[in-house]
Amino acid sequence: MDFDIHQFDDVSPDSVETEFTEFREALVKLFAQSPEGLELQKTVPCIGRWADALMYYGYQYEGESLPEMTVGTVRNVIYDLFPRKISLASPDQADTIIPELTAFWNYLKREFRLRRADAILQVLAEAEPEFPDIMTDPANFGIAKSFFTMGQEAGFDMTTEDGLQAFMLAFNKGILENKLQAPVFTEPFENRQKTTVFPKPWLRHDPADTEFKSNAARKAQKRKRKQAEQAKKRNRKRRK
Image (cartoon, rainbow, N blue to C red; front, side):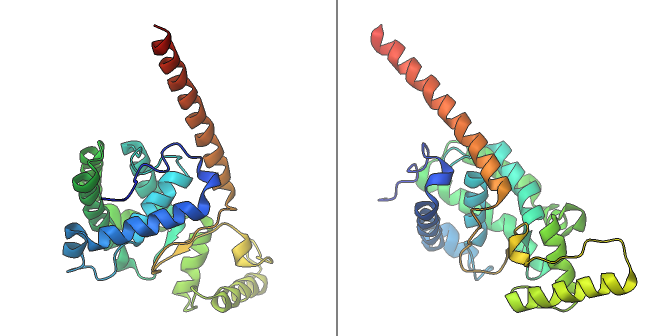
């Protein structure tokens, strides 16, 4: 197959935003056309959003490209980042997440022979029974996702800017009228912590996220140290 799945293995996440977006979209399309993707579409008509999200969070937050992705990173993404940051249009969408990721990793295992595929598939199998509850448990939500969910439950269309602003005004008015001890939001919602809303055909994420920047920098430094160590080993072998 004429697709280089390793093209971001040695590239810093904060320097290739556009290229990485194109890489994810191309790979998701290949997955959708694969036997694994076609089989999944018999029960899940719109696929690709979760495979895309896994690639994004694994790379931008954990500093690991898809071929480098470890069991620990997959656990962190599905048990922490997804529940904390991604808002669902409806709770039943949580039921489709692990099945899609399982089909995606079966595709990667067959097509690209990624060495950790079996171990990651085992993690996904263990997560599947409990994952919908983890994804929809308010105790796991971040601030932005909690705010988004409150607006949904209050009947506001939180997928639009008008809906976000309308709920923010109603929320602040309710706090002021009832003199509750809670924060009053005065800045646009998009300037606070980000949350991703599904469904969307492809994900788009905010590169200005402060957590993204700190984690990406930390992982990039770790990657550079590893590359330097590998270069030293190669040089020593050449001198022998």
